[in-house]
Amino acid sequence: PCHDPSMRGAGRCRRLGGQVMGCRDGHRWGSLARQEPHPWICRGGGVTEAAKAEELATFLSIPAISESRVLLSHTPMRALAERFHGRRVVIVGSKDTVAVAEHYRFDFSGGWAVTLAQLAAGTPSIFPQSFGRKASAPAVDVNAEGAPPIEAILILYEPDDWAMELQVLTDVLAGGRPLGSGGTPGSVPLAQAAEVFASNPDFVWQAAYPVPRYGQGAFLDCLRTLWRRLSRGAELRVTEFGKPHPSQFSAAQQLLEGQLRPGEQLQRIYMMGDNPAADIRGANIARGGAWRSVLVCTGVYRGGPASNDAADPAWRVEPDLRAAVERLLRAPEDERGGGPE
Image 1 (spheres, rainbow, N blue to C red):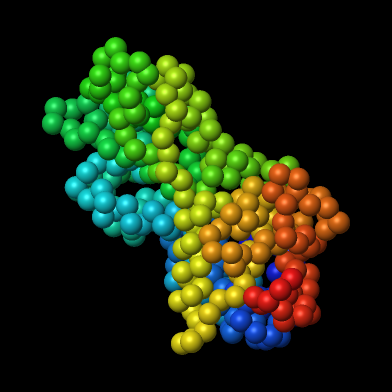
Image 2: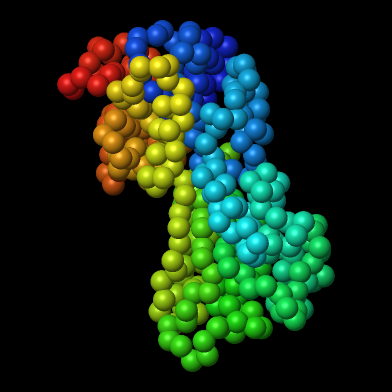
C-alpha cells in the first residue's frame, strides 16, 4: 500500500521497506529496510521501474531504492518483446507507457510496435468521432497495402480514451482487411485474430476520491463484453499479469530469494496490502506455502481490523502498515518464521 498514511511523516515508520517482507530473523524496525529482503510490488505502472523506485524513495523519505527491487504490474511483460520481435503489436496505456515499452525493447522506430492513437490517426474513418485526432508518433494506416497484421495486444497500463480504444481493439481482435471485417467470413463465433496480454486486473482502486475508482480490470471487462457480443459468443482469451495472478507472486519470491545471503532460506513471506481481491487473494493462492496475507484498512478495504473480507479472507487484518509490521516484530519467532502456528 504505497499510499498508506502510516508510512509517511517523521520517525522510524519511514524506514520500512515495502509491501512484501521476507522474514529471516528478529531485526528491529530501525534497520528493517536495510536488512530484511523486500521487493516493492505495485499494482500500477505506466512508468519504468527506475522512475517508480525514485518516486517511492521520495514519497517515503528513504534512501534510494534499486529498480531491481521494484515489481510493477507490467514488469513480467518485458519478456514479450523478444517473443514478438519482428511482429506487429499494439501497445495500450496512458501515462509513460510508450517509454516503458521502449525500455522493454519493443520496436517503435521500426513500426513493429504501435499505439491505438497512431492507428486512429492514420487509418481513415476507423474511429469517426476522432475529430482530427493527432498522434504523438507517426500515424499508421493498418489497411494500407502490405501493412503487417497485428498479432498481439499488450495492455500495459490504464487507457485514457475508452471509446476509441475499445472500438479499435475490437477491430484488431476481429482482424481481416479492412481491419475489423474478420479473417474468416461467415465463421461463428468469430475467431480471435490477435493474442491479448494485460497487466493489473484490479476492477477498482483507491484514488484521492473517497469512493474507489474503476481500474484497468474494468476496462478489460468492457473489452470482454464487447468481444463476446461482436464475435457472437466467443470468450476473449487473455493472458493476465499482476496481482492476484501467481506469476506476479512467483516473480516477487524470486526477487526476495535474490537478496538472501549464501545459505539463507525464506521461511515466511508476508504480503501486506489493502485490496482483498488483488493483494490477499494473490498471497492466499501463491505457490510454495510460504506466503501469509495481511490486510490493512487504509485503501480499498475499510472494514476495520476486527473484521475480514468475506470473499478473500486474510491471515491477519491490521489498521495500517505500521501496526502490521510492529505486531510481526513483537510476535514469537515460530509465528514470524517457518515454525508451527
